[in-house]
Length: 211
Length: 211
DNA sequence: CCCAAATGGATAGTCGAACTCTCTAAAACG
DNA sequence: CGTTTTAGAGAGTTCGACTATCCATTTGGG
Image (cartoon, rainbow over all chains, first blue to last red; front, side, top):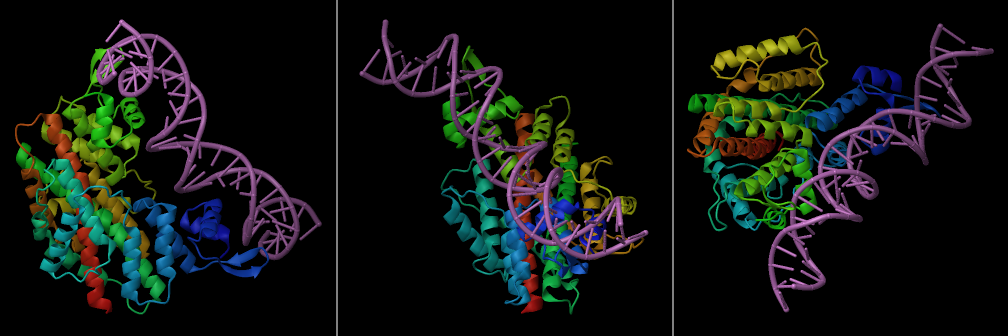
């Protein structure tokens, strides 16, 4: 297919596709002439991934580039590639609070307690620490007060079951890039769903308490 | 305190605070002279809320205005106010897919199945439907294929327990605006934490499957 | 009490991100 | 064979979120 058809299929303007090409978010089509290239299903899927990252995941172009780069890196195994993609999804925040050492230590204990196989350098550890710090700051805890994760313990088994279910859904035998795209898109899309469920649960709990 | 001190305490430039005042994100201080006003703890807390909404929650100024307006509306009870604030937190997406009717119907069944006390008009229902549609589109399901939520069922009890715990943590006897601020901020901050946990669970599941 | 520094309020300017437009020479399609 | 479409590259636009400037007060240390 040519770029016009790709635009129609994905519902994305040609000018925007060209922009994605320039930014390296979309791999070029097979050149058939000096000003012609042909695109295929991998391009359709990629455009969907990019749009999911940008619109559902609210990533910047720069962050999306990091994810795409990880997806395209063929040198490492699926699990590592997924880890890199995950890391790229973690939003950057300024980390000035002096609560971070305590928060990081609490995260290590949490990971240990639940026997989670999470890389020591995984950005997601930092992400959880960010939350603990923000919560402590917001609650106005005194600087030395202990930061705990015990409120989270109850939800871990359910999340692990959900994650196992989701990872189990990744089809076998796909090219690795396609598998990683699958997992990254799943990460973003199901994340939004989980947030929706959480908010439903909050509204329910609020109804129980306040009405 | 004067605006300079508010700026110091919250780590926000004076120019930005003035911008928030102009945009209605921050209520004005008590005027003590034609060019003097004094600010108090409610302003400090509000600035923290605004920054949590903008930076952790990645809301636009316009969306944050809707949340703040709900927080400031004294005419309704706490639960309703929280619902309005929740609705304002749901990001806007373009909804062109023809899968929406099926997705909405599935959401209704889901809410019914779990006995969730969620308002019929709550935006969070739409948010979950968005996810189902995005997932179906991404997986390339044929247009008529059924959209289900059964993968989510397992996680609901844990989320409800977590939400009950969190709502239980809201202190009693605060002014209602403060209570709502508390819950909104909690929604945003703990949401980030939940996403972090989910990603840890995904990495764990990926390790189990791919290594 | 006096003057540099801070303030409230308003307007204008900046900056980066994410597109969107324009242009040119070369296919492609009917 | 003339109208469309295309690749590629650069310039332009739009919008959101600040940031800077200005002025007429007001404050607060010496």
